[in-house]
Length: 440
Image 1 (cartoon, rainbow, N blue to C red):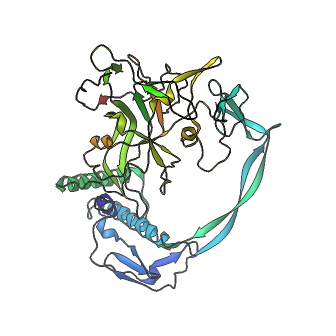
Image 2: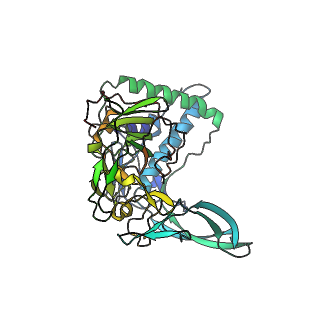
Image 3: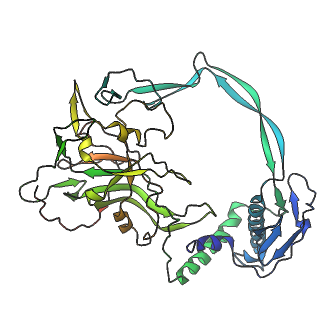
C-alpha cells in the first residue's frame, strides 16, 4: 500500500546494479554452495523462479567510510546486507530438515498453582437458576478457581529429552567482522539523523486504506441507564424507559473531571492505532498511537457484534443494535444481576466461537463493540481504515452521578449497576455540541 514507505526506508536505498553469483548462497549448516541457478536484476535476486530483495552493503554506510572508524561503519553495513539477504532467502522456504535432541527439566504433580476467576470451561459450584429461556445462570459474582500445574498429586522433578525438527534454509555468506555496543551507538545516531531528515522532506501524508484495520487495546462504554417495564425475558417485548432527566436540561455526569452529557454515550480506549493487515508484507502504521482517548457517540449508532473473532484473518460477526436495558440489574432471589439474554451472551467475547462447552451465563459478559464512525475523529488519516476488523470487547459502565475511575489496563465486567469497572483514566473528551432537549 502507498503508506508503507517506512519499510523501504528501513531496507535502504534502491540499488542500481549488483554482482551476485550462485556461489554466494549456501545452505546452513552445510558450508557447500548451492547449485541452484540464480541471476540478478537491479536490487533483486532471481532464484527458484522467484524474485527476492537483495540489498548491497554499500547502501548502508551510516558514518564515515574513511579514517579510524571506517571499519566499524563498513562492518555494520555488511551485517545489514547479510540480514536483508537472509530474510529474502528464508522467504523461499526451507530446503531440508533435521532432527535435534535436547535435555530439559520437567516436573509432575501440583508443583505450581494459580488463581483466577472462573470462565466457561470451569465447573460452577455456587447457586444456579434457570429462567424461561432454559439456560442455567450462575447467581452472584464469579467464583475463584485454583489451578494446579502441571497436574495433581505430589510434585516431582526430573530431566527428560525432547526432539524437535530444525528447518534448514539458504543462507548468504556471513561477514567475518564483529561489532560491540559502543561501536554501534554512533552508527545508530547517524541512522536516526538521516531518517529524520528524510521524513522532513515528505510533504504529503498518505491516509490509510481499507486494508488497514484499527485495533484498540481495550475499551469501556459509559452509557445512561435505562429500564424496561413489563415484557418477557425470552420474548424481549418490554417497554424501554429512558433515564430520568435532571430538570429541563440533558443529564450530565463527571468522570475524573470530564463532563459527560446525555443522550450521547462515551467510548474510552486505553490505546488505539491503525496498522496494515500484514498479509502481503510487514506493513506499517497509519497515523499515530493514541492512548487514554474518549469519544462521544450517538447511542443509536452503536452496535454490538455477535460471534466475532479478531485475527489476521478474522471471523466477522453479525452486528445488532445495543439495547442498554439488558444491563439493568434485576432481583433474582437474594441476588441482583443483569439478565443478559442467551443469544447476546453466547455471541460475546467470553465464549469461544465453536466450543460447545460454553453453556452457562456467568457474570463475565463482554460484548464486542463495532467501532462507530466517530472513531475516525481520533486521527485524520483513518478516513479509509477498516473499523470492523479488530473490534474490542467492552466493559459497560452505567453513568450515575460523578464517577471516579481507577486506572488499569485490564477491563473487568460488572455485575451490579453501581459497580464501576476499572479503565484507563481519560485525558480528554472529544468535543461535542450540547444536545438539544430530547423530551426526557
